[in-house]
Length: 427
Ligand SMILES: [Zn+2]
Image (tube, rainbow, N blue to C red; front, side, top):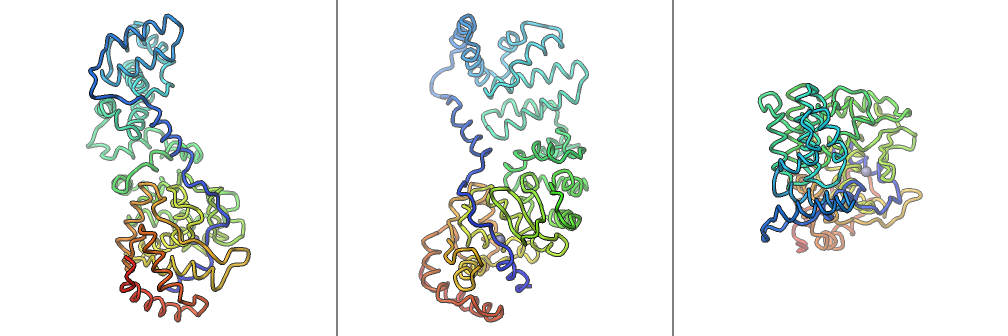
């Protein structure tokens, strides 16, 4: 099977030059939001009266925003503080009227205040018999708690209110169902609703999620709900079938998030991933179905911070991944160094002859976890996070090879270089 994948190096590559942005806007915003939250000090004793007094004074002075920050501080220490919730409800006892009072606080970016208000709204909605609307509030709290571990007490309350572990053991699947993702044909909406939830799953959580999806025979409905096809996507049925096959197989469950942000087109340029447009462009999904995982993998690496100009590692990881899915192992070295040498020795019209290997350390935590996962199934055994060691191997061993030879000759020089790499003294 090696020649088949070797050809991918020639036929499929990153569009050049890709944008330098290593971090996607939503990850960046989440980080900003997290950093701007007030730090809760465990050392100083919490003074409920002080915060409540300031809340009152600031409201009197007309500074609602500052007053709400004190509510947030109170909710951080006093989960679902009943007095504050009563004041926010305008002391209304009747559910519909209390709900109306609370509505104005549900959109706040103050995390504890928002969680407390959402939970109280959910309780009121349940009392009014509108279960679906209540579940949406609980889901919003669970979602927020995934991004902010300090919300754990609120998460526990939400989970206790809705959870029926026997009925739905996987929270992520429950969240997607609650958001209506699996029952809707509105792909754009589904992708927005699922994107953050799926992207922030760890590898283990993605596995658990997909196990639940597989157990309930929901793989194809999930793919159909999220897969975004342009009008031009040629033979899209083959693309859908390939995604179903990969996700049924269970070897690359972390890849499921790609469905929420990569789009698929066929403009006829070949088999390419365009980072700036988050688009996989394959001329015909039936004819080139073997490139689907490879190009989608570029989308994953782009999302998780592998710099666009890290051409060697991008190809290395993304050539190794489909090989791993098929056979249980994928050689990263042949793909990384072979790619760099291909540009140097064979060349692609309109592309530079010198391309960078790149540095795996630019990946975010999930990207690094995937890289380490692939490294565990990489027969070359190279530590791709040791950029100096990798550079040394290239200089001492791989740069001496000629890539402009026929495929079998290349493979035998790969075998020699792999053996020489082990004794090159670079690590
Ligand atoms: Zn590629």
